[in-house]
Image 1 (cartoon, rainbow, N blue to C red):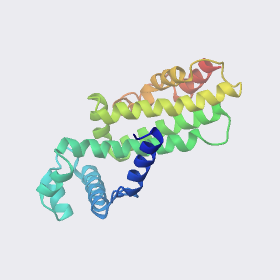
Image 2 (cartoon, rainbow, N blue to C red):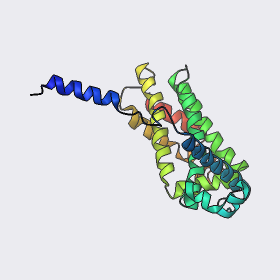
Image 3 (cartoon, rainbow, N blue to C red):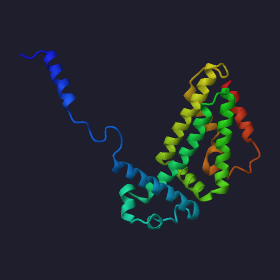
Image 4 (cartoon, helix red, strand yellow):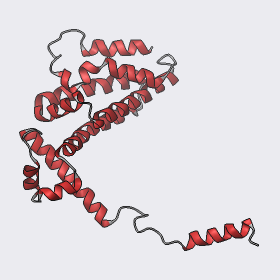
Length: 221
């Protein structure tokens, strides 16, 4: 009769003899090539969107620019809308990289929060002026609440919460729910961070960006 120890040794032996999956140590060469092709499609789509806009750029235009067939593009993206969202996600990830870099700096929380929000507002308005086609893509994605935008908002709230939590720990801000506070700060700054509102509200003289930054910091103290 087998004991539990015998069964344990049997299972151990079986696991030691089991073959190791080919991709256990990382992506296969085919997977890596696929990821590279996918990245090329997104990068090229961003370039064409910047020149012609996402509505005027077709999958055929993209295929021609990449010297590949439309069918090959559809191997990686099931629709033109999926390409639009991938470009949108790429642009939003650039903002998250800026936010993360600021959030983990060695500086007081109030300084990090002010710097982060001011830089995001600056980049939002600058893109609106210098890259109107890409800005319109982000504005459309925000108005229609694409999954990429919803995910971006949650990740940005998490980054703000990290700063707020640090300020609470150091006594700069009063104690409380850091994530809730981060979400409130994000909502309060909508006029300056929302792609569709940046240009529309630019002519409003009050409140200024500095006014709103001070308002948010005062609410946290």
